[in-house]
Length: 109
Image (tube, rainbow, N blue to C red):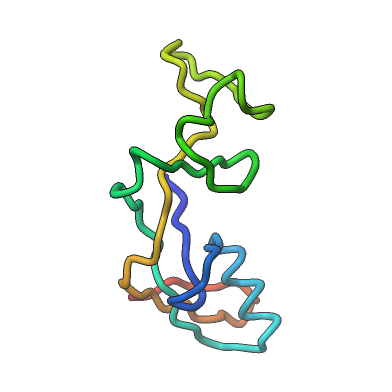
């Protein structure tokens, strides 16, 4: 199953996983929170990438063995790094998480 990412606030620069949402809810003593689902931003794919290893955005032309200390080729052998991802943005669709009595969270729509 593919991991989903969420923006706590619509204008946040960074997104979090479900565990990040749980931590935010606990830190702020929330029983329920509405977050924004992150989606791929394919409009930037020709110019920018997101490096999962470095945790940063980079210019696509710099994602290669000569320019990146984190570069790890995929098994395809086509010069693509396994840590290269599309940039993501706030998609506008919201998801509600509710805190359960046992301390876990339940995703609802």
